[in-house]
Image (cartoon, rainbow, N blue to C red; front, side, top):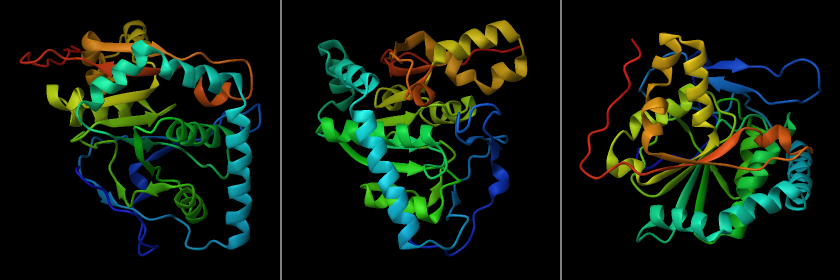
Length: 281
């Protein structure tokens, strides 16, 4: 998808039944956020608007204050310093510059952010994306989508300089220009949809994925030995042969819940080489 529409207003509701919501585990309060999977491999992109139709300045102000506190908290954390320093290391920076090529800016697309109003991990994740943009002048526009975003959250996201998509892309954005897909703690199906939509040498060379470890997915498939699981991750498995994965350091603090198990993924398929999927039979 070359361009995506911004939210224009609550005209009609999108069909929520295409998404399965994963509620937080019981035990620790706010341990994690709502996450979604895509149970059907539908390729049609659907118009979307927030489920709720009302907001008010007080709610928006409270959420903005929460976000500002979270951004400052994360900026002072050991995790954030380590994360941004890793991005500035010469070898790592060269990987970003290679994807940028002759372009000056790299777009960021955030899928599956969850509810920044209800949960701390999504606020931490959004805060990191905002701090990355502030730190690096080559990071351009930030686009955000999650089917559970409320109207209040949409207003605050816009105020923070993000664009909330009005189209449910189901993770199928084509990288027609250098694009960083920021997807911590998304479901495997969403990563697989993204790879499927960019299953070509040129497209893969234009994208970077920050999210769950693809190596961990590969290990899980080898252990569970399920053809259904392997099929739902077939592009993740196939891309591993030309993926450089760099894990990020997490620490035993409040940021751990937002970024544990996360990695950078850079792709380098050979020019002229066919891209093969792995047979799960």
